[in-house]
Length: 207
Image (cartoon, rainbow, N blue to C red; front, side, top):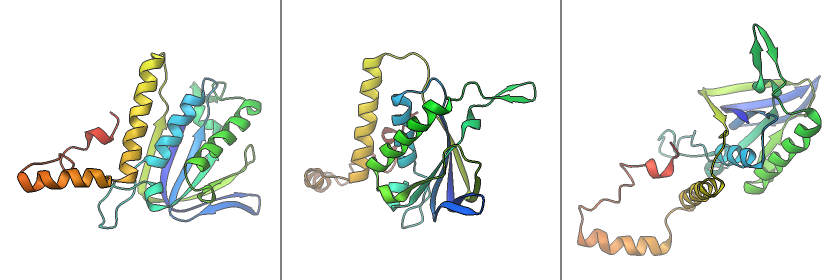
């Protein structure tokens, strides 16, 4: 599964003269499904889209907040041409998921995104229609996502997925009361002690 994620100040989709969807500041996501995609690919892409830190915080620090942190909007557009394979100069789309399978799968991705976030902030175009997508890219900032592929040990994969989900939940919730209470005595005993939070963010990100 491939996704082109663009940070936008505004974006909209029209079919003919009709505006199907529009958003203000947030993300516009072009999503291409392949014939090999499974629920694991969908879960990965949904999690990444909602947790990508492409926005600044209230102090202007870049790459600090996600759409969920800022309660911003997401516009998704089904884009089978992302699965293009060139044969010479001619595009071939046989690796794209067929329409009869792609439409319910794409809808399930939207449902998953809405269940993880605020449903009213997730918009989409019209599947299979000839659309005009109007994007005002902010930055410009564009990130390409590709879901993991190839054989993997299911037990190890499940462990990695759970670890990543715990990290993202912890970051979104912030430190707990008990954590702050435990940290306070330490800071009084050793003012030079460092938690590593300022200098090491590797634990929050996947390689």
